[in-house]
Length: 195
Image (cartoon, rainbow, N blue to C red; front, side, top):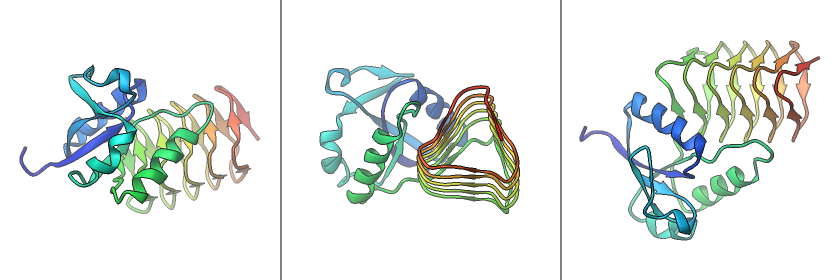
């Protein structure tokens, strides 16, 4: 499709594969290639070539406008934060990527660089800050706030009025009580009940 915008993906692991699927389904962007480690240049991820390393981002910023951070986040958000800050400094635009199979309320706000995966539900008056991952089948209920650089994993349930401070990881199938605050840099294990 000639009207699709070209985008680079930063990171070629498992999360990248999931994001590729969402980008293809969304059909707003054409994937130019993947940026990864030097020894992976020339390899392919789901048919897309690893074309360069992080060291070449400055040169690539002269040719391409859009990037998506496709490095996952489990133990730490530090790599994603570094890539986000570098991309912003180089003048890249980081669009939010939202699966057409997700439900996002028209009253919700999603900031730049955030990826909303398949079958996510985001209800009214939710605010999701920049550079977050809201993973497959997660539920974010009304009036919740998710600050920057967070990963809400597969099947997690964030009940109404919850505030998740920056740099948090919420494990798969974790459930929060309503109207609580999860402190900055928290790591919530899979299957946890957070009260």
